[in-house]
Image 1: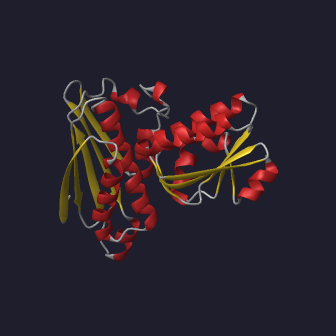
Image 2: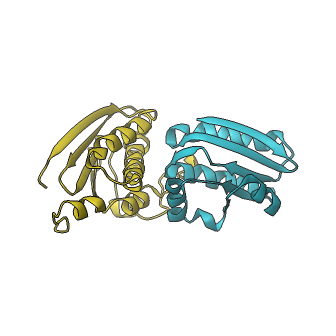
Image 3: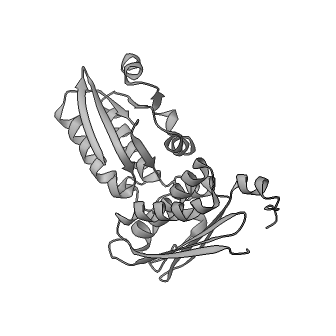
Length: 111
Length: 153
């Protein structure tokens, strides 16, 4: 798993590359949580363009991040997830709390 | 099931084997030329079953997970077996959002994902002995192309 982050205004934008499962969930959680703790940000955008695979372990860790961001009054958005990832999102009902966008700029403008 | 081909994998319950297990199973199933979506469904379902064995079956200790895959002219049957602690109440475990480990940020969606992505999911478990998950999936493209009936049980 390859993770990079940048801050734009009050938004933390994380790019997630590789596969998000039980094995990589902890690395993902620690990386995003560090970004949220070390920067004065309110919202979180996850760029999933290069996320090739995700299972329900990813849902658990995403809901955990949603709770953290929600506590500081922010929102979580995902960008450009593939069909497999999108199906797991749909089954779990995560689109009710996390909105999906086709580009980072669209997500930034809407937050 | 008129078995055309089969494979068996034995792996220790290490989390780094989750990716290997799902990719190996999908590679085996790809002989039947399923769609990309059908292969993704298999990968996701296998990932869920193997993860359950690691987290719940064996918890903090290490054991062996056996994955058996059989194929006939219509699709695949995949069995994921552990000899871990077993599930006390299978019906409860299969409920969406149920998790015995909320402190680990588990979503409780594992069985729901398996049931959604596969045609059939059977769970057999005995406390102290282990759990077997058997999943079946028929590939739509095969039933059409070969003139075989893939609809009977």
